[in-house]
Image (tube, rainbow, N blue to C red; front, side, top):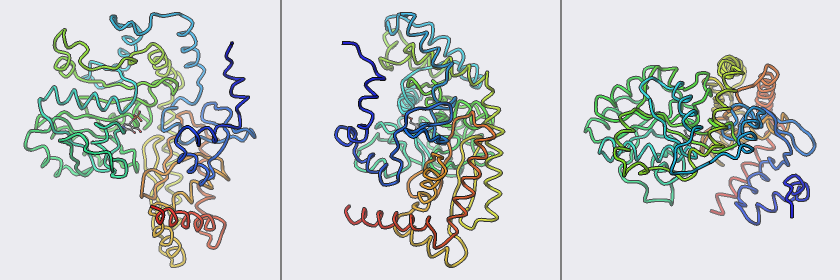
Length: 463
Ligand SMILES: Cc1ncc(COP(=O)(O)O)c(C=O)c1O
C-alpha cells in the first residue's frame, strides 16, 4: 500500500490534541488549552506560521532558536532533497564521510584560530555531554563548574550543570563534582578555581534563561583565570551561536578564545538535529589518542549525511542573505525602540539583549493601584505578569513569544534572523499596545490576570 503523508495529515487533521492527550505528554495539551495557544498550524514559511484559518503569526520563538534561517528555507530543502536522491553511502561507519569533512572545515573557518578540530553529535545536550567527558579526560580532573541560572540541556550530565532546581528536582543523584558560581562574579570564580582541580568552566556567553549579559570584561577575565588554574574554558553557544547575537559567535563580541565551543540548534536549518564541539587540537589528541580509542566517544547517527548537508546549506544561507548583518541592525533597533518605552510604562523595567536574543523585563510599578494589582499576581505565582503579556501578544497580535524562565518576569524574543522592517514594526507596536493595556485597571488584560492568578492558586492547592 502506498503511503501519502499529505493524505494522512488531511485525514487526521482534527486529531492532534486528542492523540497527544492519549499517547504523549498530556500536560502539554493542558498548558496550551489554558493559555489559549491551542492552534492548528497548517503551514510555516520563514518567520511566519499559518493556522487553519490562514491567520499569520510572527514566530518570535523559532522553535527555541533552531529556525535562524527561517522555517522551510528553500536552499536547505533543496540540499536535503538532492542528498536523498543521490543514494549516497551514508553512515558506513568503518569509513569517514566527505560531507562531514566539508562541514567541519566550514565551521572551523568561523571559530577562533585556536580551535582546529570538530566533533559532531545530534543535539545540544549531547554536545555538553561530550565536552564534559573531553574536559575530564584531557585534564585528568573530575570537577566541573558552571554558572547559577545556567541551562546546558536536560540529559543527566548536562542536568548536573543546570542552574534551575525546577529541572533537577527528583532526578538525582546527578553527576558528582559539579558546582556553580554566580554569573558575572570573577572573585567567586577565582575562589572556585584556585585549588587547580576543576576540569572545565562551562558558560553561556549570554545566559538563555533570563537573557543575562556578561559585564564587558567578564568573559575575557574568566578565560584568563581558567587558563591560570589549568581549567578549560568552554563556551556553550548552543543558543547564542550561528548569528543569533549579531556576530557569528557571541564570544566574538568580547574577543575570547575558548578551549571548546558547543553548538547545535540553528546549525542545520531546523530540519535535521545536529550538535557539535569545536575544540583545540590538544583536546582532540588527548581524547582520541590511540587507534584503539578511535571510537571512544561518539554516537551512531552523528555525522549523518542529511545533517551535514543541511548544515552546509544553512551556512550558505547565512552568508548569502547577510543574516548576521541583518540581525545586528534590526535587533539593535528593536532593543532601542522597546527600551525607550521604559519612560512611559511603569511596569516596564528593562529591555536588554544582543542581536535577536532579546529580554523584555517587567517589575513592580510605583503607583499604588498598579502596585496592588502587581502584588496580587506575584503572590499567586512569581512570573505570572509575563503570561499576562505573552497571551494577548499571541491572541490579539499574533506574535508568538515565550516567558524567559521560571519565576521571572521576563518575556524573551528569539525570532528567525531574517526579520524585516514590517516585522520590526509588528513587534514594537504589539508590545506598545499590550503594555499600555496592562496599565489600564480595570481592563480586559487584568480580567485575564485574575483568571491566571486563580488558576495558579488552584494548582498550588492540588500539589
Ligand atoms: C545554552 C544551551 N545549552 C544546551 C541546550 C540543550 O540543547 P538541546 O535542547 O538541543 O539538547 C540548550 C537548549 O535550549 C541551550 O539553550
